[in-house]
Image 1: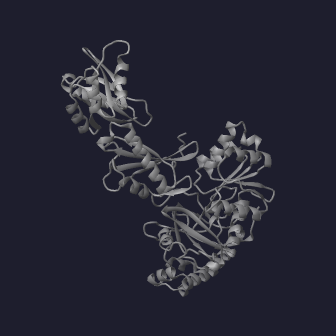
Image 2: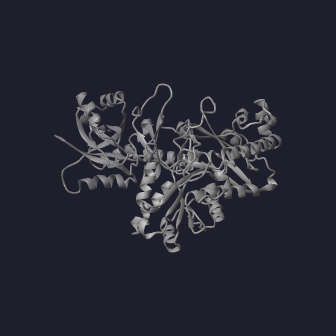
Image 3: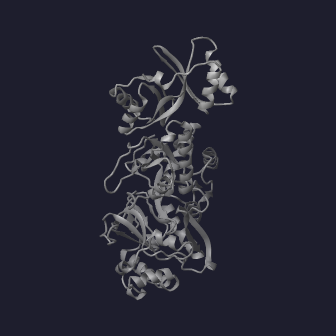
Length: 439
Length: 140
């Protein structure tokens, strides 16, 4: 089933709508967001210069740094009085990224999520259990209202207390599950421990997964747990752009359909900033063309993908983005939290007793991301005391938790045992990328 | 009064311990006692060796974290209650034993002790009628 007629428009129709909305949005941000006006003036481009969709390329990019520089409301294009909701994404350098929605934005959000939920196999007959953490994070409430719009019954069970989650699933007859891929796997694990076979004993047949990358290896594992006949899809979004709802897979599993009447997607060469031809891999750049509160122009997502415009057998005509293959920079997404190696480095540099070299290891264990930091012990005085070594470990853990908002493991090693580099160091070992599960 | 103990930080990795003993062997230094606790990520290998200063230098040269620590080598007689005699002396001074391990080598039989206050412990042990090996007696 296809939720909206906008998903099956011809390319001409889509582009016509996009151009209209783009012009309107650019006009509006130019008039109401001083930061944008400044950027456009610096780039010597005025709203009148946007005459075709290709003219979008004349506009400057927006980056995460712009969000930080304009914290909290500097990039908002609507008066605060019109706001109905404020969310924030995980802060990476202290301050979180703040996003806002007007009544209109919330409606667009519901609409976009409704589309992806239906594309994923959801319907009004579903009992949808949302196992995303409720709160400032956009994921839970985004899916919540979108699925409600579809007509499903929502079980807002949030995260944690997995046994209770399973009890709800069983007793309430949950048919659709919203979670991160890793939590969906964890739920299945716990189910087995308490004697429930998710594929046989539960009615969950639709898994709408998101907020972290799902590799094909992971999808396979999930099918083993939840049944080969289960519909397992992932969707894409980020708080800055809206939250979930930017794009989502249909059951053809041929990439994620972009809601093109609300977002214009481009793929650029992350080094030169040049727009790449359709089908080429690069950094995804997204422009919001219907948002009132926070209409970001050419937002650099740092996600690597390619765009596909060929028609999809599902009947949708919207462009698809290939499942992500990584990030443009070193940013790591660990259990849904954004982590920059530079943050880790900052903590290590300010710690006595350890050397300047370090390694960051990310792996999956029992379907959950594990972050391990290896550092070299240098302080002589510590060498003969487990107490001192343990204290060092504890203080590192504590300070990293404060910095990252996430627990990590510390591995103390002897001096000169970590790999040394000439030129650019490669300190991050992300074993998840190979789809490896080091259980 | 104190014996120089050689402490080496070793991460729990295959072959790491062997590399340490290899360095010491090649220096023609004798290991009189060694002790390591069961830990998951790393351990501290504590040793009494015939030439601690040279052993340490050789290990550091090979990139190991090694240091010398002052510990007490208390002579023990092989009889009932001997260890209690020692712990009682240290305890009655209100001191803690951070760790201890045994050494038995030909003519020497000792308990290597790291007390929370080495000086006070040494004094009390001597006053209590027990004997200590000196570093010279150990490292020959």
